[in-house]
Amino acid sequence: MAASRSEKGLLAAAAKRSQRWQKILLESSQQSRRLRVPQLDELANPLKAFAGQSSNYCLMLSERSDAPSIRATLNSLDRAKAASATLAIGPEGGWTDDELATARAAGFHEASLGQRILRTETAVIAALATLNFALSPE
Figure 1 (cartoon, rainbow, N blue to C red):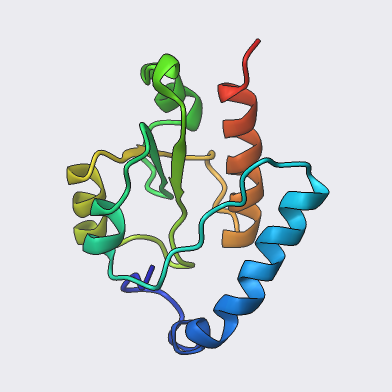
Figure 2 (tube, one colour):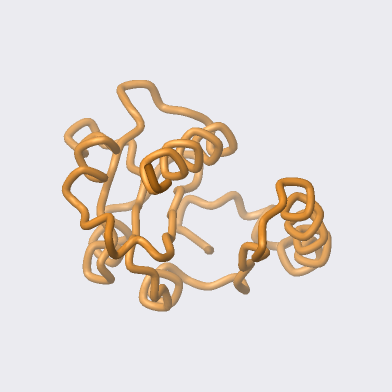
């Protein structure tokens, strides 16, 4: 997603790097014995990216101090409908107010990983581990 605060160099290189990222997704899926390879969408603006999600579970990580915790957000959602999930993790510098509003309008639920702001690549790991734990059958 081409968020307002995305690093411009990464956006410019996204088309070239897409093939490499597809390969990484395939290899990591095979290594972890996933049956389905995660989907890598084309670069899109926030409106298109958020509106294009069809998952039952749409979660947006936020560094805002008044954002509900990921635990509270997950507890408020209907886990019986959690056949698929979409996770939006913002750029370094966070989401703009317009991007937050666009995500909410598309059905995303805001959640915080805690009081500390994590680097984007660290937030991905923490959020995926949390989602995997919360959505796994007992």
